Image (cartoon, rainbow, N blue to C red):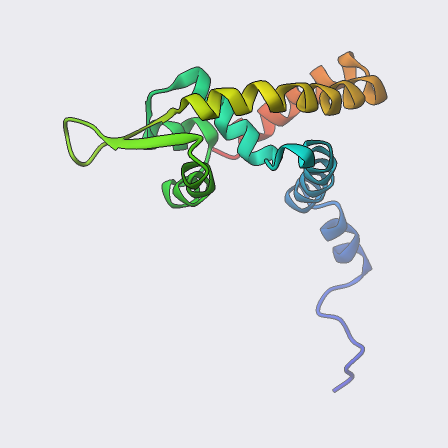
Length: 151
């Protein structure tokens, strides 16, 4: 058997290179690295900042509802909340129904958001300047359509 033979031909390979999922994930990694570098002095990653900001706006919110809003499974959300809880930026508590858990931002979390917001704005402004507001708006609309198509 020829070890250099491929299970698929060049047209298949070209199609794989244009895979929507792989392309979006590649873009996600690049943009995450960019925002993380700008936010580095704060000690937060962009994913943590986004989660913290969402909880600040929506909280107190159930973990299930937050997972739906963030388009994450509950296990992944709980894992992502762990560092924020450990740092004292968010607090989780049982609801009246013990099966429900609520999450809310603490005072330290609110102060952290105030500190990180200017760094986030710097990263956001760079992207907006590089791409233009119109292109970003169009991109976000297209990404929303991708989310809708995948559900």
